[in-house]
Length: 270
Length: 321
Image (cartoon, rainbow over all chains, first blue to last red; front, top):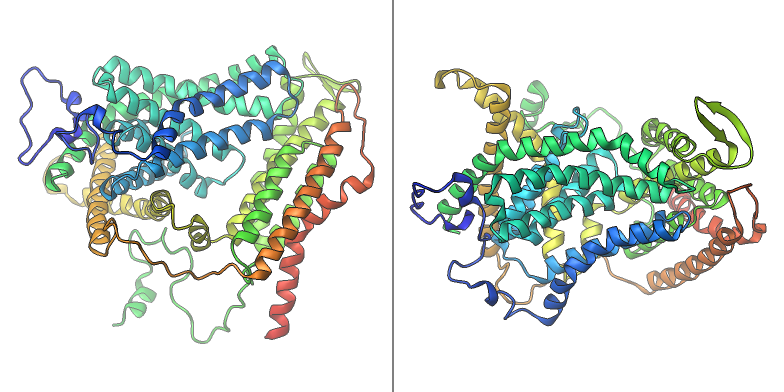
């Protein structure tokens, strides 16, 4: 549990797995704060935006399926508009939550580390640490920060690779990976390796589905089931590679990064 | 020895090369480089933002060959004017193959049409299917070019000025992450060099352990730095609860408002024209339904507007010098 380490850090209990102490409470959240108290003092705009987060995230794949079912031709612009709206809503919700400065800085750092990691691993196709870092950020900083880390990492790393119509989709997909990571951590599920690595593997395939979906919907016509399946089958090996790489990154960084973050938490008495 | 003289002898400091792509020492004997004037620099950042965002949005929504061709031509012309021929050519090196890939993927994934061109194994390639792929490839390249043009016009400080005073968290996170990413790439080199130099600490770790160790050290270093920076910002009044004053380098003048109204009118006309053009157009089973020429006139004006502004700015710049 990231915030549970005080100064001096509490020793691990004999039956406790090391990974379990990484998740649970968010940075900047008071230890005596009860879960229900978080929303009580918030402004109405922030509450409305927070309530719209999940519908906005679900709206993107729902709109994609609806446009495909209705056979709307050349839906590149329409799907992009829905993705941009969902992104704007989630980012506005983050802004309205008025995160503390000491939570903003780690968010920026983890986004920059994820972007730099993507650049460093760019010679290996589909081996990217962005999903793993977004999940770690979601677990350590909360679901909104997890979303922002994934989204900003996509935006910043594309300064190196080139921006394009794919940027909002990558921002949405990686943001969602971090958001779900945060939700799972809030429920204490990421302490179980099966859930952690399961979401790591699924995130790669989910990311591929979103990116394939935007391409097939917007740029392939006439849209038929064989064409959708052909596009998905063509990218399946790459998506599985992405998922496996995310699991490998999670296995590599979950404990060391948890220790490093706990050390900083203890050193600066966060 | 002065710092600049030392750098001239030794080159950039380790880890600094990603931060400073250009030469760091100005040669006194060299003629002063002529700065390329940035288009739209005399007006408020909202004007180029609305112009370029509107053009990109319209390009993405109007998937019709003539509309896409107009948008692509406008984006290319503005790229040549704002970024120069070399930067445009560097981008086209990967953008043209991308266009070709998107063009070929459509007939491979979804064969349809009435004019059979050839057979590629079991797949039939039709002219209509290929034309749709080419249109969408050109649409994608036009979108990329407009975004590159926007990045050349809307520098980071102008984007921050656009964010407004009410938004404070997101601009901070984005601008910090954009500055930290190249710094981290430089620091990764510094961490690896330091770890390689520590030969007395025992056997060298394997490749995987080395990468994990480097990334963990990098993350911890950056995290500690960021918390120090947060405290420094708080010491300077951030999060104090008092209203913050802000020095604005740009002010919205009457001429900017007039330009925005004109742009909105042109965007509305171009959208109406694109709507008519797209409503009549069909790719399948046969390409038909080309709208009359006047439908495209507002779109042509909109796509050419940034290049015209850039050309006028350059003529003014040369006239003054």
